[in-house]
Figure (cartoon, rainbow, N blue to C red):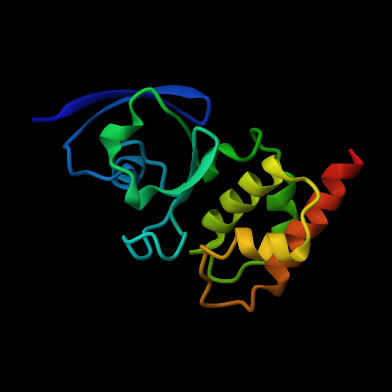
Length: 157
């Protein structure tokens, strides 16, 4: 039997039907066509499916879709403001902080969650905050530098 869920995704009301064992990642990708969050490990180890759920950074592969009832969900698709990229997205591009792109949405969402809580993080704090996100292509330095550059820019505004 499917369960009817009403939630908010990227500021918009959403409704869907789900089985009790379906993950939120499955629903986001397969039912709501929000494919930015990637399935990397299905065990919460890689961070590719990171989303913000009620202001908290979580791996969508570890959240059951039925738990989304009445919740506020933010995905990579909601990060830009229309055609205007979020400062983190701009800096990831400018600083070449991405390669194959599988991990990039998760890193961006995790970095956004960090900067919403702390707009003046140290390099150590950025590294700690992003430790749940794995990248097999880069050495992380460009990603860390990009987050720190964004934080500095956002503090000036």
